[in-house]
Amino acid sequence: MAQIKHTDNYYYDVIRKNIRKYRKIKGFTQQKLADDSSLSMDYICEIESLKKQKSFSISTLSRIADSLEVDIIKFFEE
Image (cartoon, rainbow, N blue to C red; front, side):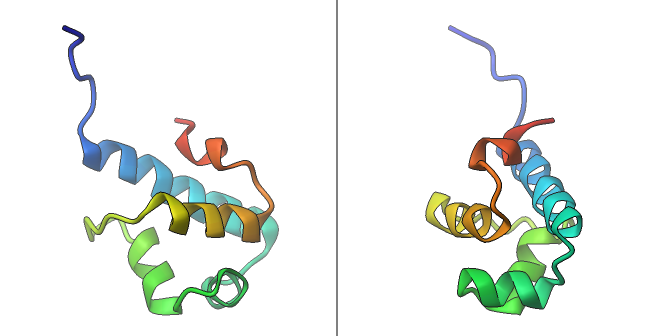
């Protein structure tokens, strides 16, 4: 059996950091990203917050990727 190298929280943190990074590269505020992805700003804040361990779905991640015009795989890069 393969040994698990990282926890779920590790991967969520990588994704959170990348969402924030690509949002800033695009010049979007959290509100703009929320509006473009049809999500609430509070939810975008929760997703980006490293203090909260809130999980999110692949469909939510896809909506964010589409709004930022970035390939979803970029969110998983360390």
